[in-house]
Image (cartoon, rainbow, N blue to C red; front, side, top):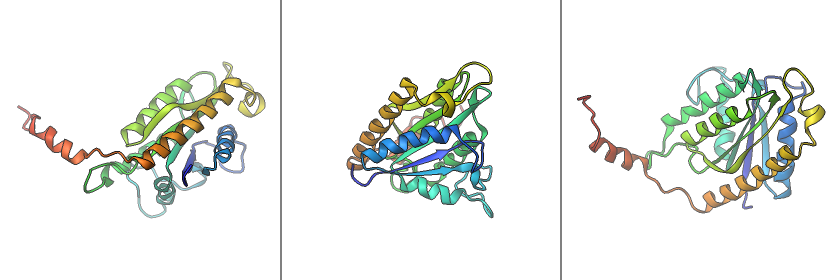
Length: 220
């Protein structure tokens, strides 16, 4: 692969150095990317002072701009989150809200959002159900802000109903999870290389102008 970079946004609710099941599954992906010579950066978001908001910079004390810079430098963006009460955790929700700030930073010529040309994926851990819901919403959000989604771009592990052993204790031998993490890595790498060699040409500004010509802009 030609100088591709991956950034993992670990949205665990546990600050370092607490053990993170989400990080354990991330490391499986990091190992697979290493095998195909792709560099990975893992950021545990909760270790940083990330402000609530919907812009790329919420002002004094906000550490999101430094994280966002690494996102913009990457070819592949992987959102990794635990499940809480059946849905993605609050840190993941905040990350998606901050990523949406790119709507206001579109390319002046094409109107493309900053994450155009990047590949998105999702990793999930937790107990009970919720993995499909978390992946569906997160992958949809990523496409909406410009990312391309390759086939099989999610990998997850969920435990049995109720409190019980976590991924680190009992999930690392899961065939399904070990299979899908490899699908995710190789498909995102292929898609990222394809987009790097063949940038998306769509001019959103021209299409918006065309849409305005046929739209009811006066409310009548």
